[in-house]
Amino acid sequence: MSLQTVVDDVKGRVETLTNQSQKVAQISLDTLKQTGEIVVDKLQELVKTESAAAKELYTVTKLSFEKAVADGFKAFTAAPISYLPPKDKFVTVYTDTVTLVTATSDEVYKTLKTGFSSIQAELKGEAAPVVKKVKAAAKKATGAVKKAAKSV
Image (cartoon, rainbow, N blue to C red):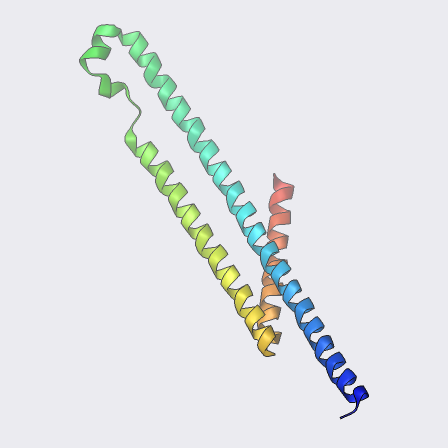
């Protein structure tokens, strides 16, 4: 075995590792970009939902306070619970928030799992179809976020 053969063999292996590491880095960046877009999109949705609920709760609370002031201290102390806003509003806001956060975490988990599977497949040498799916999903998410940003 000559020195040139060893050098060529090492060079070939280094080139292969370099190509694989570049593909792994690209898959990682695409996956992180996609998860970031998911989180931003869902966070905007959460802010809109919570803002609307806060405005509604503020209005109801203000009306309850005004009613308590108008009815007087005796009426208020006789039945203070009747002046509280309905608890179903609070429960609805809480339920909507939990549902949105759960759906977001599931979506982020699936995206990260797909990215991890893509990296494993790339290292095994079988990444082509999975990488295409991740890139397509990232492009789709990018388009959706751009539309949402323009509308805001």
